[in-house]
Image (tube, rainbow over all chains, first blue to last red):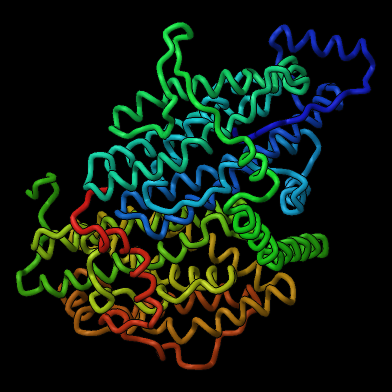
Length: 325
Length: 265
């Protein structure tokens, strides 16, 4: 998911206040920025929404990698629009975070220092044009699984941001699938690229949901707070169930020899991804961690004079207005 | 009526090659500047800039599609906008050199956008009342977006020029670097003259007068100094004689179409 393995913070608040807060959530009420909330709820949300925002921003990079090489003018426009949407999602989510009392600059600092994470998926390289298809289809597809339920999350600004984001994500998934369709029905070389992209992105997409958390205390607390709606395993299963027939329709093979329909559970049995690889990627040892974070740090550092210039001008204008009064 | 129901392009056959060339200039300027702008995607100095730069690139690629589509129609050889974009080599590209230069820092990118937009805005304003309805239609559509781009770029030039010492120095350096490339936009050749005489396009010297007024106003407000050197040192792009940079840009842009001829994407 765009937010993975979110630990919940415990709260040292008054037990009665906590119980009243929980009762509000249980009644399905939305929590709004100026209302009382437990410190743990606030901190956990900052961690989750912040990680989601960072994922949107870093997520511009793997796809941005192909904008200048998009094969037609129309594909170029669609990809540009998609990457621009992701920057826009980042903006909504940072704004949602700001309502919890943390600034965008503070969150950026935590991203750049490594104190906050972004989704593991964006540390994988985009090697061919088919990867634009695979990302839209699988990565945005996996994100939607998590984000659709989050439209009902308890925190108002997050839920509302998610409503807008979901509309755009489903367009992203469709454009990804349309690229895969063209390639799967194209020349043998295109079909090979499409299959290769599926082979490379399948397991990293399954990792997006995070390791099984059915037994996790963090997960239980986050679900009670309705910050998390489903377990990782539920979402992963739902994703596999929806995606496998789509791969079949494309004439592509999911790279899992244990994949088979299970009538009893009315879902597919499938192989777990390599969780050691997942933890290595989180630790910074994925194929593109250094490039991705390096690109974001460079953009920030190179842009410092620009941001300072704009602030200095704003200060001068304010001083001029005061002088004129 | 053309197949899509729009009016056919009204033009003497003798003028077709010049009109094709001239439309490629409009389309290629948009395509190449759009390409350069899109290189910023995900690397901008602030999130709002990432969004704005992607938006500008998107607008320009859209303009390119319309101009090259019309160019292909005028040419009448059955080529499409995509084929013109992806299958011509550098010598057939007709953009001015200004737009193909590497981005440099964000200051240089914005200064280039401003210098080009100020020209682009005047050109499209004039073309939006062109008696050639097909040209006028595209110009009117693009003008709305370019008017916004010019506003945005002018605003940033002023703020950064009159910002900190460093931002001022960087904007002045950007202006000094780009200035000798700006004259090409106003240097008329046989193609420009043919379009002006046919009543399709405005006289470039009129555009130059208006461009200079805008540029002087904004640079004054930005506390930047107009360079004293000639502004038409680097010309030739419109005739297909480019800088070394264009070849690399095209190698990247055209890679898939060249590597997999005839594939559909």
